[in-house]
Length: 364
Image (cartoon, rainbow, N blue to C red; front, side, top):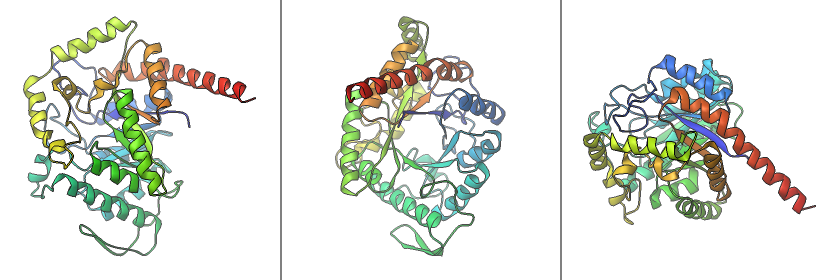
């Protein structure tokens, strides 16, 4: 499988970095509709809409994710549309019905990203309980099992610790999937990795080094093999491509220099319990420093910063250790997303073609 490309939909205000540096991007629907059309024209495969419900760390305005991908469906043709949802704020039976409807509208392009954590405040303002870390992943696993059952069976029964389904179904069923829409999840903890191995199609990883990514892929793949399954892997990256390496790193330094320190520190305080509360002290943001938190999924760590050739080469290195998809965020979506598609994606494809040709000659 050739490596796939996705982008963070900027459906919340404030851009993809918690910095006061100007960002040529926008959160409105009209902007996002045009961006999605551009993205599929220049080679992107997926778009991921973020789930936010309250103003937090620069995200004063938010378009809800499921509604956003539903609205993007009729204005796009090829792009697969991923909506992020939070178990605890949504019932899986309702999401199964909404998802199958969006899938029907989009002719089979709906996907789901199941988010087990994020902000405690988004639960408490609605009066919903905030579960302990590992319990949130147990709930998410049940959530996914219900989704799959509702999408594939006509008389689905389920009795878990969090959900009960008594002969449920949805019609129309999702279309053109084998056997259901693709299900993504994130998380760095052991609980997240175990959950991915059992129920998820894709495992999203925070930004990381090649060595760190390889370790995660090897562990989750081994766990999945024990379950008789395979999991695909997506990697978060903040992408800065400029004419020279020096120019790209100068932009990065300026983003960091203009960081919204109060917001970054507030975010760090809000999420630091994510990894610390696990038995293994391992999880999202457990080892993130101040600079990592400026791009709130450690996107700088992936190192896709430099010239088009340098970034393409590094993407190929990630692919060689098992990454199946790059999830990109950009500083200036108005310019950078299209430029990445036109300049970097073709270079990655050329590298892939050369490698395949070389392998074929070796095997003759």
